Length: 277
Image 1 (cartoon, helix red, strand yellow):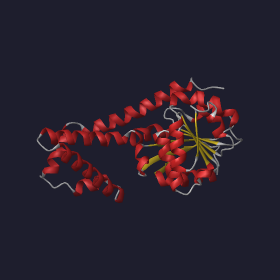
Image 2: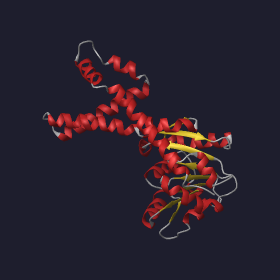
Image 3: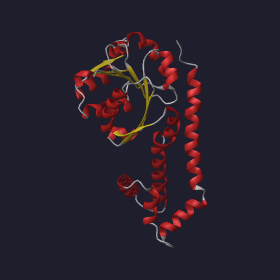
Image 4: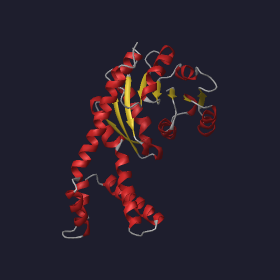
């Protein structure tokens, strides 16, 4: 299978490295970057064909020519111009795999008629092979292509097949969700330092606590049961959890997820008017 990556930034690069780690032949991959130096680094590191817009303004068109899968890794507000630029160079039946949040499949199809679309929502732990990738193919994508794409992405993290309508929710849960854990970690570190703990010790302790909790949760994805197991009646954990409850923690989490979901839907509405034939 021939693969093109259009816009290979941090997330695109993470997916690309995972795909190659899973056995994809480097010779079948072409990637584009904005700068010539980053393209040279990608080519040297991964053995792929890497092109830069700095050296060749038509690099995106060159990259998609003959590709079976085209990963669109550009920012949402750049997607309209990028699709307009490359659509005439796309191979018949080429499948477009969009990483752009807030641009729905119907909008992409209008910009590149006749091409099946898969929307994916990866999160940043994909960079360390521990991500979550929500995957929503449209009805035009053949089942065997969905299976092959899932296999390609699995080395990068957990691939979750969903309906497109569920992507805004998954954006609030897994896409943005990593930041919620980071913010909790940040507040734990700040609290520890404010009460006299060395900053480095606090940061390492919180990071190790998060890693251990994550491993337990991965082995047994039952958060309520795990929480109960560590909470003794009348003990220190119970006192801390009571403080969370008194502060409306559950409602805050629900509000945060809803805010991210709402913003994703707003972005889709905004971007519908930016892409056309």
